[in-house]
Length: 287
Image (cartoon, rainbow, N blue to C red; front, side, top):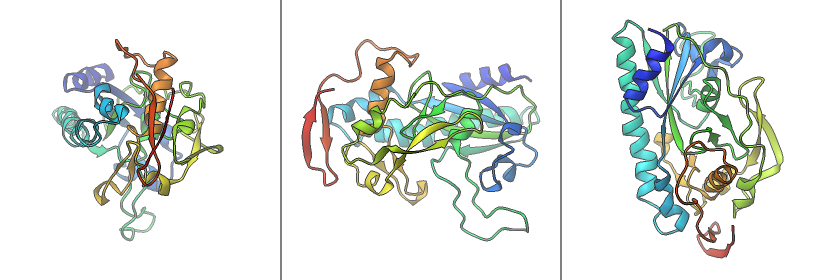
């Protein structure tokens, strides 16, 4: 078995994106973020992505449908069912060849320590891998100024899962950031001012970092502009791909010709609607 055989199998199982990260490139990560804390014999992290259909964002962009298409097909069903099935199928494909693989969802949060270490030198459970670092290490994309992950294929439109495996596979080269270029469309689009381009910090794989804007999560949690608030099962994070910042990033990338998937019509087809933190309609502005 080689890397191309694995990738071909993953695509047959529905993967739109597939990359392989060498754990050696992740050795610097602390135990609470390190794949080897979960599977010490792992040699690679396989990162699997499935795209969010552009049409799932249409109703939110028009301001006419907020709780069906994106929330269900672009988020919950895509992540919990379709992406999970693809990841499971690749997992079984590997195990049928004698290799162990640990499946993990790409939750967008840091570790969630909920107990004491089981032994001296062990991290507190639960170790949750930062999927954006894993995906960059697997050559799939970069973290933009907004903090959202961007790929050359789909911009912000994808969800990820991971497999830690002891299969010895040729890994992909880590992704060098070049898509975002700090264009600031995300910052300018947020009607709540939750993102600050004046306050940034580097984020990304060591040696391949980009600048990420400071973000006021309290403001994101009251966003009425397409953000989805999650429950404790997803660590009460804010899903922002369909929010004003995520959609502005999508528009900017497509206008600059930086996404490989092309469409008949522009995504943005009229004035931009906005709501304040109480949900009151603000004056729309031209794009």
